[in-house]
Length: 265
Image 1 (cartoon, rainbow, N blue to C red):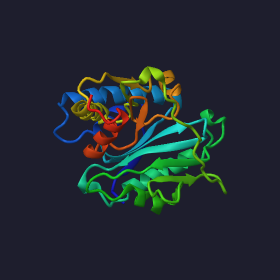
Image 2 (cartoon, helix red, strand yellow; image 1 turned 135 degrees about the horizontal axis):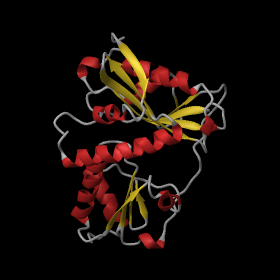
Image 3 (cartoon, rainbow, N blue to C red; image 1 turned 180 degrees about the vertical axis):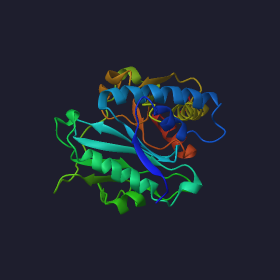
Image 4 (cartoon, one colour; image 1 turned 180 degrees about the horizontal axis):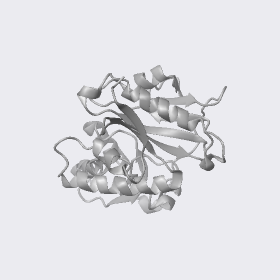
């Protein structure tokens, strides 16, 4: 365990610590990360007002060293852990991630007003891999998480009530005629990388479809635009949800071309 470790809730007073912890060294003056930080702060303050807290920070001395970020989902009575991250090598393998999770676990065993004055039933998470870091899904497995789906090691849940088994809410994507011949990018801006990712997605789409209109939908400010399309992925092209992660350039672009009927325009 790291010496002088303290876990604090993220509030409006230390929200900048949460945001800055995720910005890579050397990218502080990059316009895309400046905009991404601005959008994340707006997202964070909105959700802090609504849910009181959306993340916990680990401080070693006075310096932020790690985070766990989460979103409450009242309609499913679960809390989704969206990120757990310790950026600096010197702070790895010191129990910071475990301490962050344990603090969240203790907090979420208490009743919350947005869960009808009850505690949530479970944590859920989509674990993802950060280069040169311990695999997230293995970390969560060690913390006691279980697979939601037998064949998917990354979609996990942790029951907070005895005997609880998480079943994902059944929801389908709704194809709308107004989206024909267009590309939609859905952004929640909960990460400082969001604007950088958005521009990368635009770039990859335009390489195979230079003339296609691209619309960015802010999921915080335009919830009705999300709701009317049902279960959306991060990108929709020509009324079809794109499921391939944009980091896999070739496969992503192939799926975009298939959505456009195999054409490049």
